[in-house]
Image (cartoon, rainbow, N blue to C red):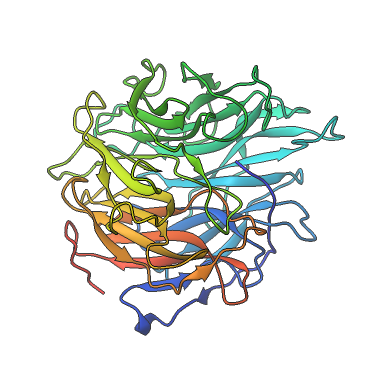
Length: 455
């Protein structure tokens, strides 16, 4: 989703806050001269948990005038970071970045690549979703592989990919790579005959090739990029290789399931409402959303196989964060659990949530922007953690000073978080002291399976 942005070819690392000042460390990820980095994603390497790879786009500047995607690599558990630009040989706009590790230590980065959108008869046009693979901890990347690409056209337009790798130990489809995204007939069109649908593709050879994409949504949405558009498709994998996808749209939360490694899917299943819709206004931002995120417990703990969905809606009169779960493969679902623990109906806003289910201890970890203790456009962040299968959540404030948002600066559309064996690393955009957008992480360490903080 969404355009603008980009950065320089610098490689550096910066601490945002003194580690001794806080219960958890907050570390600057993006370089100090990065221009408005946003739309973040993060993944911890299961083969080496000290290796973490993150991604975002950054606003363009010479010699790279268009918005570009960037990888950030840490080899010391997130304490320091190195910036690695994503190759862009055609000089296209990149964004909507998503990264995910395979159980063999390979890491995949999916993102948009386009030019000519929203221009009548553009002199140059192309759009698609590209995937790069790294087998050396994110330091070097293979050439981009298109999951889908349209040459000399932005119709249809492919948008907002979600990515997952089958890391289930006993899956017959282990290490398959799955992508799901939104296809617009025409991006941003108000024509009632213009539609969006959810599309899907998979790779069975470690990202070297991707199968021909196909539509998995039975019912689509409009093209306005708002509540009645189908968006937010994030795939997840169960312990037997089940593929789950949930997205948001005019009917609420839609659930889809495949039992043959993503070859075929069952029918759309509406699993919940989203009062107020997924697209809502937040003071100080150009836009905000509560689109869903899907995850599965692949641990050997008591909640193994539990499927979770995390989202935001306004059923209580203001945007709150929710998680619901299914312990029977999506056949039935629990009542949504409210994740933010501030007083209900207090008029305070939460936005841009993301979730990670720890594959070792089974905890459910959620990051979101939070205005419970602030006024107007001042914003904090909260990380919430559940160790009882998503029934209850303990909120942990991210120790970052409240920052003011600026609606003139594109803030992106989502945050990110990754968890592994009690190490929980949320990643997020924020405005720094010089009122420029930056990307940072918070480093949480818990005794696995508990709420006990080790630092």
